Image (cartoon, rainbow, N blue to C red; front, top):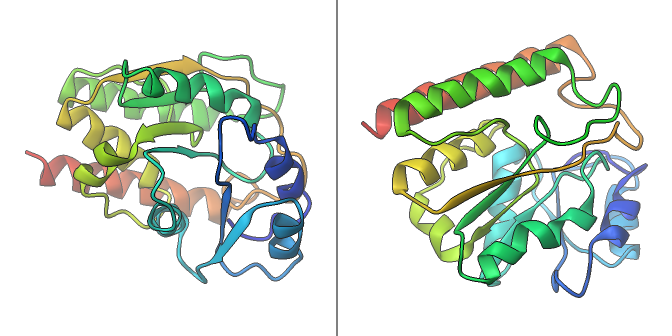
Length: 219
């Protein structure tokens, strides 16, 4: 996460503490008040400068020993109140990996571009062809058993992290459940991906590169 001072405190405060005992914010070297506001809201903050999206996620995983891990972006576009629904099937022993689908859920107008939905659809088709698992999104809102994640051998440090997790989970035969989730326009600040052409192209390239690399690696 980087420079999300406008949104992070509300996201942290909205996390249901009766389900999530340890709220960790991984900061990639923000130059605004992100770190201070996250701490003030009750999060444990880890600073991993220039870590990349996947690198930040990996840092968060290493920072806790909790048996179930949930991931959410800090821009307020996903609702932390939906975390319990994702975690519940894992705690019940019914699923190993639960991922939200913005494509199947209710989306606030302007929250997702047509190119994002198309990219998710195409990635889903590729993964279905490769592994026989149906995904409709690469939503960052997700939960997974820690021991299952550790066995996947995650390596991606870029925006390809989410896709890599889905591909490796499918290839490993994990019990996977996709649930529709609500999606909102980000609560403030500028998107690092959709907010400008350069960011969009960079993220698209990283995701495509991850798809090709992981598919070749796992043959």
